[in-house]
Length: 63
Ligand SMILES: [Cu+2]
Image 1: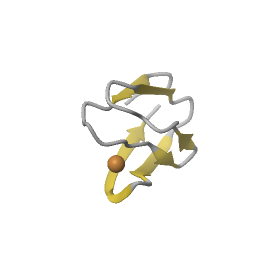
Image 2 (image 1 turned 90 degrees about the vertical axis):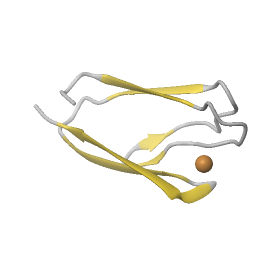
Image 3 (image 1 turned 30 degrees about the vertical axis):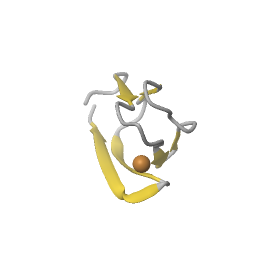
């Protein structure tokens, strides 16, 4: 991604999930809920779902 771009996470699952780590901290996402975050700094952002810590992701932001 480029600096200034936004990611939107949407929970399509019936289970609850969230997005936590590297400065990201969503509320608990019920089915149909979304979480958006605009990345203003270069870097590698690793995150997990704290309810299911094996669910992990990475966003890489470049200038
Ligand atoms: Cu989860």
